[in-house]
Image (cartoon, rainbow, N blue to C red; front, side, top):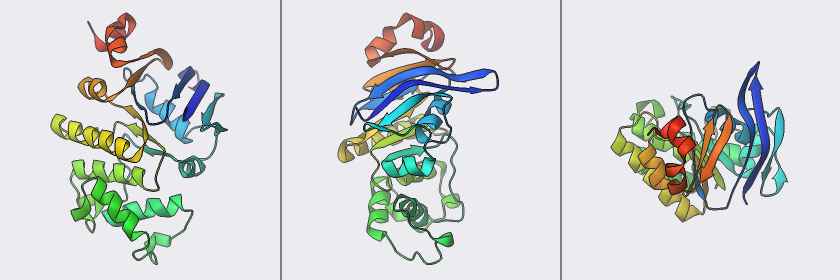
Amino acid sequence: MIIEVEGLSKSFGGVTAVNDVSLSLKKREIRGLIGPNGAGKTTFFKLLAGNLSPDRGQVLFEGEDITGLKPYKIYRKGIHKTFQHLNLYPNLTAFESVQLALFSQHNRRSDLLSWAGRMFESEVVEVLRSVGLEDKSEVLSSALSHGERRRLDLGIALAGSPKLLLLDEAASGLAPEEAREIMDLVTRLARERDLTIFFVEHDMSVVFGMAERICVLHLGTLIAEGSPDEIRMNEEVKKIYLGE
């Protein structure tokens, strides 16, 4: 297993966002996480990535306890995350954005990239090529289309050779055709790079077409886990989320 979660819980005030969740992912697996709005999916991902500390529970990554580690330490161990709401630097080019991620991965510092020059150039160019942005290298992220910014966000997550990608609605805000294109790209990159993918997505055609296994959260609780066919036929899931 690449990641094992045991009894993970998180509350905010009197509201339980994640309630005693346990699961594990195999290396090179593509796993989907679904559930109604407010189910706790984003909170759960933030717990895995270190953006939040759990109240209870444990997270093991490649057998190592990473529970409560700072995000940058988890990032350097190989867990990279995209965000539901894009968080790009508007005044950096696509090249500089990926370059900055590589600085972080390699524990290098650069004040506004003032002296960075073309450091890590070959790695940056390869990442931009892999997400289809090689011709947008010198374009500011703020000048990219929404679909291109989503690709750049994915490229930033790919920088530094991650082992596990957490994709929180990586296709959010895209038209259906664009959403399928970017998720097809994710699947291809996962196979090429031996990545493990754990993703949240609301488009069920994308989820059932891409995921090898699916987890379902409801009110912070893991209510089902299984193959796409098993989840599709699960009566509780159909009642709560998929509809009958």
